[in-house]
Amino acid sequence: MRLRNVAGSREEIARSRFVIQNPKERKGCWRELFGNQNPIQIEIGMGKGRFIMDMAALHPDINYIGIEKFSSVLIRGIQKMEKEELPNLYFIRMDAEEITDVFGEKEVDKIYLNFSDPWPKERHAKRRLPSREFLNRYRIILSERGDLEFKTDNQALFDFALEELKPAGWNLNQLTYDLHHDDKMMEGNVMTEYEERFSSRGNPIYKYIISP
Image (cartoon, rainbow, N blue to C red):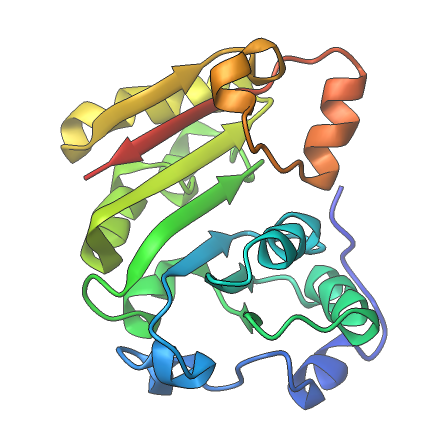
């Protein structure tokens, strides 16, 4: 469950050098921020930051950007960065609906969606991060060889995500209904906090890799 209130979190985020305060001004120029031409990978809904921080530590030749809309959760990632700074990682506090206002056309090389909010009510389907509405946004910012990786323990959300691929015109590259028992797709897998918790209970983890 997400933390809803952490006193002073918005103020601390506004002061943090790890958070890009005016991300729309960086559109099309993110590599200048990192000072290199390395690939850019983003996680939408980074939570407390474990996954993207582990990825940044493992892959110093890749630039990472973690996106989270809840201040009370993002603050945990900032606190971790203060203890273990990673030069190839920055955070943004924003809603994913604004993604095309922040990243330029074909500027991103990979998108990660990990254990996204399922928005179970049908009237909220357009808010689900693997929905066709969001896939249309991702298509704009992904590079020609870019792809998207999605992991969840929610079968209903995963089934919905699969159904959205055809109307959105995306290609299914890899698929598993039990990630932790799939040797091929587990290779190089980095777990999130949720993944570790759910898999330890014996829950299957669903994952796909898709491209536009």
